[in-house]
Length: 187
Image (cartoon, rainbow, N blue to C red):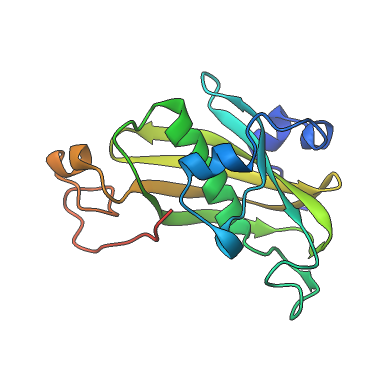
């Protein structure tokens, strides 16, 4: 098995899996725009802004949109769960105060380790790797189900509607002023 990312070595997700949530669905909805089937973050278990990490979860059930067609899958909404937790962390941390909507500007080092069968609790951790407000944030993520690794990787969160980023010369969904392409999906 490939080596675990640094965040997996720093935090024991199996111990945190049953913590009561620090932030529940209503707090998440006040911060993140996703609703209905696109809500891929059920709760935030812990968050440490000075250390740059957060742990959250998605309670997967047999009623989730993917279950009828794929009762056992590599990872339903995996990137979306990690992205929603990363965006929740970035918005609540105050690092990007003028950003309303983030997008996924890129993915790296994405690895799948085990498949998932609902019902289960998918526990996800994110950690900041590089932050450049108002331009972008690169976050490492790692997920487990029942103390077994499910996936890991890193993602680039970019502001899609930030006036400060535009003043810096960044186009929505880009991280470099010289970039001509528009990338990212709304988060």
